[in-house]
Length: 287
Image (cartoon, rainbow, N blue to C red; front, top):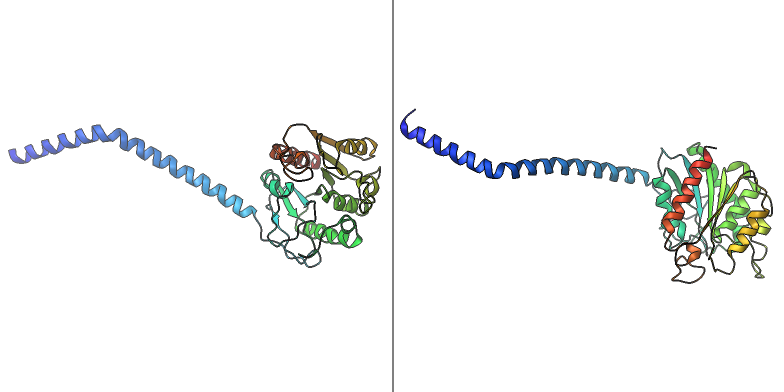
């Protein structure tokens, strides 16, 4: 090797050592960051895939409804919940609503519970008190319950919110053996209006429930047909193999009294309430 080549080699070596001395730490940090970043993306993708896998296509069951039945869950779920919203019911194909249980159902799914939203029969149907307690409606619920039983052997719970408690109460009285329990949220326990006085829990369920019964209510609920005092009175008089009362005091009320943005809809504590109910389901099924 000649003097010229040695000189060039020395210069190259000096440049390399100098550059690596300056950029080496940065590059090593970048490489480590890239590896960590890649791992983060792997975890993120896996989580995304799990969520995507847990979102099933809507069910089409003519015996239940002409509308699609929206379900979120997975084959690994430990329980099933059929949710009934209040008001005039779920009457659109998209399964969207501002109702409490529609907004909070992901919490149930994240804790390993399949969640089915029960729709009206078609878009023109309005779920009145009378309709919700009718034989026709109860038989439609039965068709969905039987479908779920063919799909998996996990326990089934009916969850009704506000006027949706009428559906739950009516079904539990006729077919208690088909379900594990019921959840009555912001329920209608006494109704003095002429059109609805025969469709409250004190008339539909009475003083006896043959299934596990969870009553969930806000102590400041000011909706005229869902007063907490009536919920407490109903609970105290109820004879049931298992019964629980979950009452809440925190939250806020910025909207109408019987709407989601009020104590009636557990405004401000929505997720906490849903999480508590979901955990009750998990504990109850193992008792």
